[in-house]
Amino acid sequence: MKFLRFSHGNEQHLGIQEGGQAVSLGQHELLDLLRNKTDLSAFARERAPGGKRFDLEEIQYLPPLANPGKIICIGLNYSDHTAESKFEQPAYPTVFSRYNSSLIAHGQAMVRPRASDSLDYEGEMAVVLSGGGRYIGKQDALKHVAGYSVFNDGSVREYQFKSPQWTVGKNFDGTGGFGPVLVTADELPPGGAGLALETRLNGKVVQAANTRDMVFDVATLISLLSEAFTLEAGDVIVSGTPSGVGWAREPRLLMQDGDVCEVSIEGIGTLRNPIALER
Image (cartoon, rainbow, N blue to C red):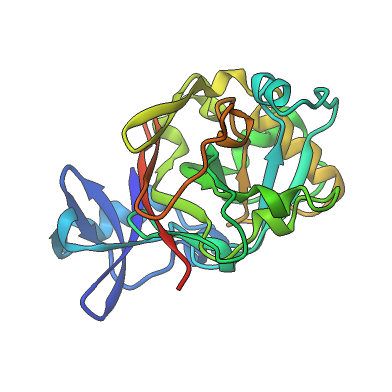
């Protein structure tokens, strides 16, 4: 199933997407359902028949999760991107965090900050957890995946490389596109592997890859991360971007006011964000 959070008028809804419509399941939060170990498919089947229906053009999307506990990002997880970035491929995942204040929804403007003109795109697959713990074996890791979504890890490169740590450049307000939906894990291949990923800037393809090419697959990431800290329902793992980023091009291709960036992942959907200058 495809779950989405959206607003219509003054009300916020959790819903499922059916064709060109959003079917309201009521004023619930997906994060609460995950933390309460709710069977998402059963929950939707019970409530959808009586739910209000809205055309997708009528609604305003919200990020699939409101205030996830942890947003764990993985860098250098496609070898072609590692090479274009002039790094050696690390033997252990490159891990950094995002903050909730950076998240924006499908259709919402991604903000090019006043502080820098170096806003870059990174199309990625997001993994949303239904549970977790510590020391999760790789063989059990995918049991803890609720579903998958699309992420645009908008990066302010000038600030990303001001220090050895990437945190600042990855956390400007309004730079983390997330959505439009969460697709439950049962509708996709195990670990979200084998899915075509494409990023387009103003309609031109700038990234094209397949999630099978990740250096560290989803099960491996969950297992390794759980060695360090407790993974919990509602945590999000943003699994890395392939080659084609604007910073690595000659001349550089950076996002400007009025641009439109789209990230599509096979079986999940397309995340679309216009770019707007910070006011």
